[in-house]
Image 1 (spheres, helix red, strand yellow):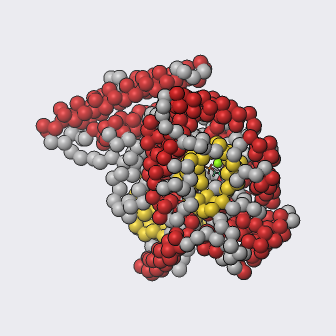
Image 2: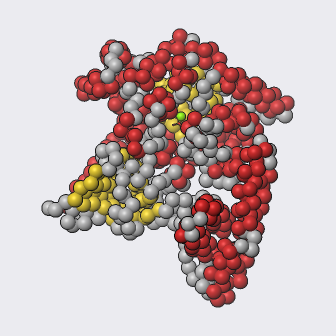
Image 3: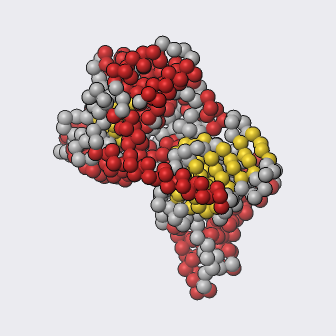
Length: 600
Ligand code: PEP
Ligand code: MG
């Protein structure tokens, strides 16, 4: 069979056969197999229905469009007012941007164009906005003018706002997809992933994205098979064509032959069978062969998914990533709204603890709700993100802490702070927490009693090296190996081009984990690990051997890790971990770990 083959940066490849079947290799970031029709998703574009209006519907549709323009203008004015509280230079810059958006909605070409499409072409308003913004963007792009090129994003942004307001269903990017659809895109953001309903979206594949980015994490959490970093994917497939996504092997097959479909249908069934078997472990205890109980907790992105943690037998929530509550919306959730969502989680856990992390926005996790507050700096991963952002905007932190304290009236909660890098940050949070607590008590609002423990993420190398002093200032540690690996090795966790270099088994990362764990034990505070390696059974024996007794992972991973815990003898794992810690070569470390696992 004649084949053409090209190899992209890294190790990824593409193969096309004479039958038209095309195989693309990428990163298998979320396991499982799906077969289905493709929906090509244009990044940032909201899917809207398109239909022809009856002549007597035109007036009503124009009214609907004008109402959405008015609503958008009100939202922009509100965003501008909020921006005024920012430092002058930032407020000014954001003000210009929002003024430009407001101008585009005031009798501009965009508004006139949409109105013409509604009245002359009898197109529904959402589709009219989408067509018009896309034409304007194309015209700007063709003009070879730097100023207009920079305005393309603004036109698109205004168009999205209008559509969200027209559909009254903000940010429902994938709402109109048929069940079993496979999404293919250049890029899917973490916020996009949070909008995916696993009942509709069978799998997705993208050109961009790394193994430990939040898009990958979210896909694993939702149990949606996904392959990222598939170079050449766009252009290789059209909407409606059949595709296979093998998230376990990191493979995408476009236009599969009947024989290939047969092979993958069997693989799909096998994966589902194995998942069902593992689900039966939910009720068994997570105890090693020599009788040590290990706490297997769940990571949660969306509070509404707490049910999955229960059904997979989680001992509690080890990490609730509260930033997802701030995505896919224009406004910041207030204290009451956050309280409602968190109280729902706490109540659903029936007495098991919920560890709630304060806002970790920044980097790739853009929280749309923060709008102008969030001007990404030249290096977002090292910039104003996570605890740095909320300490700069204490109103955000106060609302969150109040919501957590109030949710704690319904069951045990723990407060977790992201990206701590120095002692002073913990002290500042303690002061704010005390202030919030006094305010709630004064008002007679029921809050957690006893007060929740305050813990910190150890995910910055400097924090790991300062673990002893941090341990004396807080109540528990949660090791975040996703960021710890990224910052230690200077490898972006979400960049597919360097994904092959990202390695939590690098001796430098292991030493920081060991040092942190020992500091926690020395200072008698609990330590857990909630990075992605907690959910990978390959690492379980090593982590237990290093002294970690609590792991937190996507609920769907608990069965596999529990299986590994139950097959592990802790004494032997400890000896093997010591042998591993004596090594300096990552290859040798991996071999020692894999040999140990093979004996289990
Ligand atoms: C981590 O960095 O390991 C972690 C758990 O936090 P996040 O993945 O949300 O950055
Ligand atoms: Mg992190």
